[in-house]
Amino acid sequence: MEQQEVRRRVVAWYAEHARELAWRVTGTSAWGVLLSEVMSQQTPVARVEPVWREWLARWPTPADLAAADPAEVLRAWGRLGYPRRALRLREAAEVMAAEGNRVPDDEARLLALPGIGRYTAAAVMSFAFRRRALVLDTNIRRVFARLVGGQEFPPRSETTEERRRAEEWLPEDDDAAAAWCEAVMELGALVCTARSPDCGACPVAPGCAWLAAGSPAWDGPQRRGQAWAGTDRQCRGRIMGALRTSPDGVLLTDVVWPDDVQLARCVASLIDDGLAHRIEDRLRLGPPRVMSCE
Image 1 (cartoon, rainbow, N blue to C red):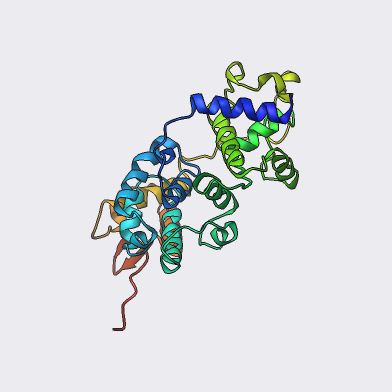
Image 2: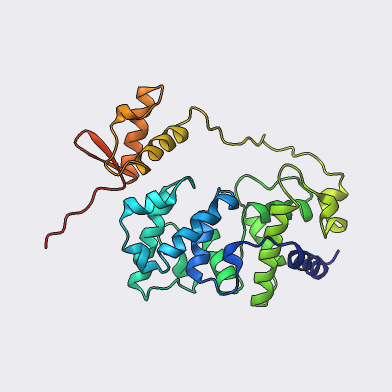
């Protein structure tokens, strides 16, 4: 199947089957798109949407977020996970607030913002500004691995070859490129999924190299989900949960955790990350406040 026909089919499928996500509504600001992209990293969309709405209502521009207390930003982040993302968003907002209070429409300037990586910068360029940019997330990489590469999964880490291949498939026209990136990402999220791909519903199944090869199982290193129970991630999450609901901070004896050594290690790591700080015998949410000399 020719590239042009594959793209036509996938974009037509998207027009009919795309999810109605809040940040896809016409008129959503570039700031709203940036928030959605950062929040959606390694987090299910269903958990993101209510938090995204709350953030955008509370902090509708970068300057609004930049002026917020970091502890309140972490509290508003809720249970999205990886709360350092919230602090990095606020740092990025400080930069944008000082540079016109708007999201840059240049990929290099986006990459210069704290916490903004290659994927996020490209996604904002594509989805917010409808500009040609090479968007590669887990879903798109998986679609290409199957459709073109004939493999069930892509390599664990993004490769130069993957980027070259994806660049060859990216239309030259700005809006067409943005439409293609949106559509192929959604195809990976809804149809060409990791665990149970619905090949019968795929608009480009007749051109899929993996399907034509008989859907061979992945023969690379075993792919395991991240453990949770008993890990430092769970322990840190338990502490953060206690801090979010305690404006006056918590005593470590208030945090229920079976391993005191692990608990102390996780507290230290949260302090190092700027997610918590100590005042006397209590642990409080966020970095310590900087006292003004005025």
